[in-house]
Amino acid sequence: MKAFMYRNKNFIFCCVIMAAVYLLDSLIFFSQMELMYDFFSRKTIGAISTGWAYLTQGVGLVLFMFLYKTRSHLSARRGFQVTMFLLEVPVLMISILVPGKVVLICMIVLLNIIVGIHTGFTFTLAAAHAPASRLGLCYGLAYAVGALGTWLISEITGGVLTSYRIIFVDSLIIALIVVLILMYRDAFGDGRDEETDDSGFAGQALGLSPDTEKGRKILILLCLVIAIMAPISSIGTNNNLYVEYCRELDLLAQRSFYAVGLIAAGLIIDKNRVIGGVCALVSLIYPIVLIMIYRESGLVTLVIGMSYAILGFFAVYRAVSFMSVAAESRKLQFAPLGLTVARVCEAVVVLAIAETGCDELTLVILVSVLFIPLVLLFYYMEKMKNTPIEVPLEGARELSGDERRVAFAKRYGLTRREEEISMFLSEGRSNGEIAELLQLSENTVRFHVSNILKKTGMKDRNEVSRAYRL
Image 1 (spheres, helix red, strand yellow):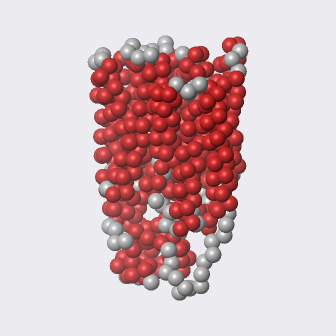
Image 2 (tube, rainbow, N blue to C red):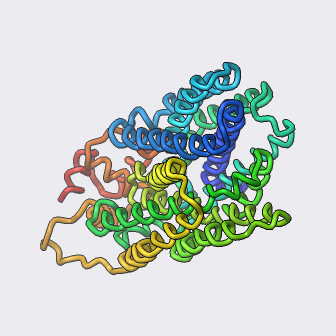
C-alpha cells in the first residue's frame, strides 16, 4: 500500500485537490440556485444559473489564462490562490445572510469569477503533474466525487443548502483546499508519476504543440469542435422537461448518475482519445432525442438520470483534450481553454433561448443543423492529427521551438523534465521563475539544472542556453 501511494502520489494529490474544489463549486452553485427561488421564477433562475453565471465563470477563466501567460509569477503563487479561495468565505456568507435581489446577483457574479480563476488553477495543476495517460480518470474521478459529495451533503442537511451548516461545511472545505495548496509543491516530487506515465510528449510526434503550424490548426479545430458541442449539450440539458420535473433535491440526486458517467468517460478517454471523442460526439444525441419526446412520468427520473450519465463524456472530453495539449506542449495556460470555450458558448445559447423562447421543435432543428459541421470538423481534426509531420533536412529551415527542444534532449539524453527545464534555461529564466511555471519547488529545479549541466558537460546555464539555440 505504501509503495502504491508513493508511486501514485501526484495522481492522488491532483485528484484530491480537484475533487475538493469541485465539491466546493457544486455546493456554491446549488446554494445560489436555492437562494434565487425567493426572488425569481424558474425560467429566470435557469437563465441566471447557467447563463450569466457561466458567462462570468468564463470571464474568470479568461482572466486566469491571461494572468498565467503574462504574470505567471503571480497566478501560480500559492499566496494568490489561497487568497482567491479565502475570499469565497465572506462572499458566500453575504449571499446567505444578507437577503436582497441586487446583493445576491452581485455575489453570484463575484463568486463565479473567483470560481473561474481557481478552476483554471486546478486544471494547470493536473496538466503539470498528473500522469498524461490518466488525465481522464483524474478529472472524471475528481468531478464525480464533487457531484456525489454535493448530493450526500444535501441529504445530511435535509436538502437545505442555505443554512449556517452549509457555511460551516463550505468553510471546512476551503480550509482543506488552502492546506493542500500550501503543501502541494513539497508533496510533488519530479513532476508526474513516472512509472505510470508512459505517454511522454506523445503530442510532439503528432505535432500537437501550439508552437507548430499543425499544432495551431488542430488547436483551432478543437476550439471549434467544443464551441459547437457545448450549445448542443446545453440545449439537451436545459429543456422544458428539466424545468417541469426536476426540483432542487431531485436535481441533486441525478448527480449520482453523472458521477458514473464521468468515471466511465475518464477511463475510455485515457484508453483511446479518439474513441473517447467519438463517444462524446454520439452522447450529445441522447438528451435531444429521448428527453424531448419521452414524458411518461414514471420513468422521467431514470431518463434524466441517464442523460446526466451520458453528459459525463462531453464534460471529460472538453477538459481533458486541452489539458493533454497543455501537458504535451508545456503550455499550461491552455489547460482550462476547453472549459472556457464551453462555458461561454453554453451561456450564450441559454440566454438566447431564454430571450427568444424557442420551442422544442426549433431546438431539435437547430441541433440537427449544428451536427453537420460538428461531424465534419471532428473528422478533419482527427485526420490532421494522424498526418505524419514532414521534417525537412537539417539546415533546410530553422527548427521550431518544439523540434529544437526534442533535438536538444535527444542529443544529450535528457529526461522529459530536464528537456522542459533546458527550454526555460534557453529563455534566460531563473530557478524561481521555472519553479512557478512548472509548479515545482526551487530545490527540485536546482536538482534538474545540476543534472543538465552534468549530462551536457557544460559549466553554467548560460552555456546551456547558447548550445540550445544552435
